[in-house]
Figure 1 (cartoon, rainbow, N blue to C red):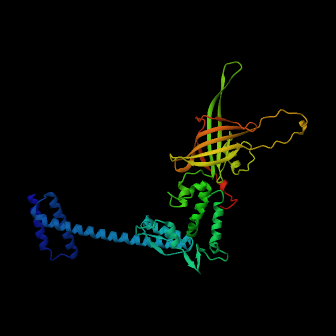
Figure 2: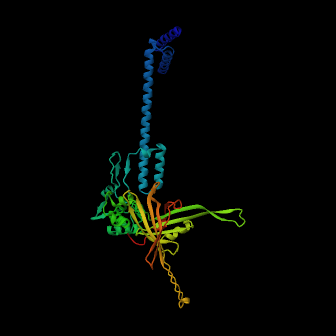
Length: 436
């Protein structure tokens, strides 16, 4: 190691003597060589005092080079992100103007520069579906408006002293729907809801623009819907803050579909004539219950599958003889459980007069009316609300007209009474017969 140090010192002396005769390029090469040798000596013999100064200078030079490279790379990334941001904003502007092809090109160029540029832009553009407001809104402030309805109401414009809910996006010669008075618009919205209480279509209509959103949140529409479902029992809003919240949160039966249950069991058959075997039968049938907003309910028990039965339950004026028709009511007990009680009867059949035996004395038959009393508990299952009905009571009442007596036969609620689950049927709300 001592010999290596002597060689190093001798080389340094020779380099100093020849310094005046070397070119600038050779001088730079010699300086780099000296730094390499100093670092090499430091690695071989750490702690040697003669190479400490050279090692520090080597580290300082390396740190300065790394810092310069990092700064250059950071500036390059910032410039690339700024360029991608310009392309993305240009694409948004082209898309708003309807030039989708140009917008796709700018979107592609922005994504090629910065793949996640969409999440690095700290702004949101006000919705322009109704042409009101085209300014940018900074999203840096965390205090967003809690009430979207109040925010949309503040964005409304007043033109010629008339409240304009929306404006046409493109100029046309035809009359726009915004030219209609507010009373006419609200009447159209009541037709959308209809007497079937199709509030789902109302919510979809509110997605058109901010003006329609405000009309769809009209308290009078939701108040009428609540009165149609619960009647006088919903005069007070407490504990709900609005009629819409009451309709969405308070337990109720659903009207845009059918509650269906499927029951399957195995029954033992008769023994064969030769006595060698006994048959077993698998019995399968369905129960259907549909509720109407006006208090009517239909019930049907049949082995036919839903594909053939559901279309027959669209209206109350069906010709199917097996359907039972009646009334229902909602009841909320002290245990905070909502129950549905219904009384249903079979449709009366008008028998034609038989004139063949009109001169013969016939034995009078005691007339009787059959009615079924049904009790169900309403609950939610999974992510859907109020989509399950559990049997709690089922009985048959026979009333004799001649004596006035009533015979009651209660059925035992066992595994044969499977819960009914709700299935939405789009055709039930495809047409509106009357407004709300």
